[in-house]
Length: 211
Image 1 (cartoon, helix red, strand yellow):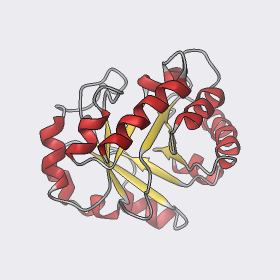
Image 2 (cartoon, one colour):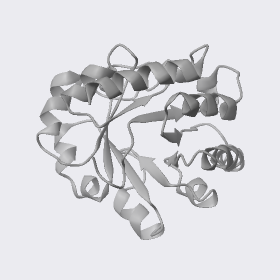
Image 3 (tube, helix red, strand yellow):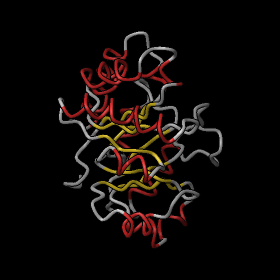
Image 4 (cartoon, one colour):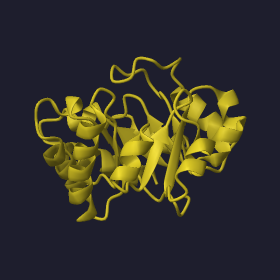
């Protein structure tokens, strides 16, 4: 595991995912359960509202020494002094982020095809998001799922940390880690759970069993 990304359970959260509950409360419960890195993904908020939410989340996460990563918004990431930013292949290029934000600590990049692994943009990333491992209703603009065979294949081709996302839950987390992922990214299985702390703890337990 890279020293810049030594994390195992990655929460991807938006206010919508929290089913009417406060995003800071849901995220804090998840952290108490074992989440050790958080990405705020808000595709429909204004810059002002996105920034305000990011600042609230960061203030809480700082008390737990848990890093906040912002999805695809350099302005918000800089405004809240986030630990990093995560982008996909259709977002701002990692090379451009490095130029515009030299202070960026963690740079994540999602890939959806094997040939994207060999691009210069992937080389700029500190970790690679493997998306989606399994089809997921929280992200409908992706291509065919990777599955466990895809994780195995890409693990043999790169030493970069691999973060698996796409219908990750307590039932598949152990096998995905064993296939070669370094970290599991979760949305609905934690954000939509009645008890986010318990849900996070159960997934974290499966991850630890796989190591």
